[in-house]
Amino acid sequence: MKKIYAKFFDSLEIGDEFPTVIMGVLNLSPESFYKGSVYNDLSQMKNAALEMVNNGANILDLGARSTAPWSRKIKIEEEISRFTPAMEKLCEVMPENVIISVDTQFSQVAQKAYKISKKYDRKIVINDVSCLKTDPMLADFIIENNLPIIIMASKKFPGDLLTIEEIIKEFKFTINNLVQKGYDETKIILDPGIGHWIEEKTHIYDLKIINNLSKLRTLNKPILVAISRKSFIGTTLNKPDPKHRLNGTLSATSIAVFNGAHVVRTHDVNEQLLEIVRMAREIRINY
Image (cartoon, rainbow, N blue to C red; front, top):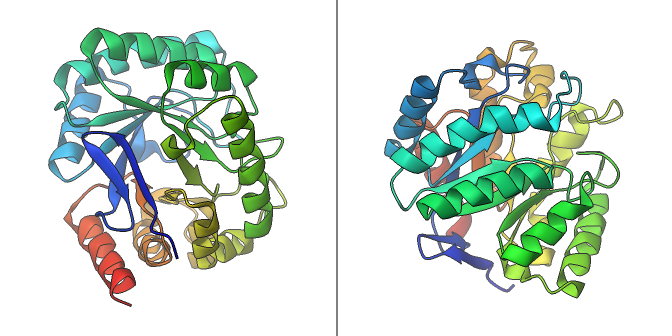
């Protein structure tokens, strides 16, 4: 089978023959489901970001709007007002090789992030959980500026696909649309959309998606998993509070990496996570 490879920037190569990329989560939204990931103070966020990078994070995922489906909705203006000072701070203090992921579904936020990144000569990737469905103008902006993108499997609403077969079908549709508009498809990372995004999507679907993750290889794109402390872990292990889901997260992460994940989005960037990810990858590549 063809080796998966992508090179978004000189500082980051992603694929089968490279170490698993670690993406640290920085939430600016008090609505987020895991309060341990929320940073309302710029100094606190800066320190957390530096610690993540020192511990091995290659990408920092900055989000100012909770994407949890039952969280309070905010206006775009509020998202921008939360996001802007944090983006400025990260651009000021992060090492040059660190990539900032902009977790948004809206072109206005992406435009603001891009403007700041140009000011500081920083590299960004857009992370859209709606698979470019929420704001069609976001796709145009990404194409125009040749920005890398993480697209999460979605048909009408974020995370509304239940099976790996549905996920693959929708990814093919979105990728083809981008390519037809002139986008370089080697700049795409795929996120299967694990999580309780819609009522029908019980934890069983998430477990099956992780188990069948290797089927996404047919799309020849790097695979990202965002499973850290999510509800399927809580349901499976009877851990209703996300702060008690670390062990389940580490277990699910190791299996996801063994099954082909190239990027791990996590709230916990530490030695324990890195060793588990490395071990799972070593078993996979030497299987």
